[in-house]
Image: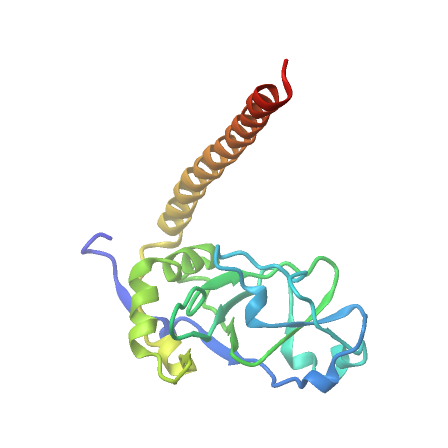
Length: 209
């Protein structure tokens, strides 16, 4: 971060909408409408709507349309386990996969984002840093669960270089992260090969050549 970059509170460039408290009795066996819950925000920062899905009646898509999530929306987890928080304050970008998604309580959706001042992917990456995670954890209250409020989320201070600089930073980050994922994939493939080799050696040792 350069000292010349202006710094603003997140609440100066965006707002946050809380989700609705859908009840377990609202759930049905299957539909095209899903309740987007905290558990759909995975610890690696991705959104997985197919993780333990909870379906709502399709009529809810209209009834609770003010809680609709769309492709590209950015959401954030506002509750986690106090003993081992993995997703508290973690943002992700929504992918609907053609489904109707409704925002559940304790998940916040960023709204009224001033896109002349902040690039959404830049916002996501900045909120994903360990510094911000520690900040949100320090503000959280609760017993077995740790909770942060709308005010807590929007109180974070964020450096705001120009939009083009933000886009440059995001492009650089995505290039580095892609290389990391490629390396992880290669390592996993090598581990599989090593396991196959191990099993072959064991087979030969105990079964004979």
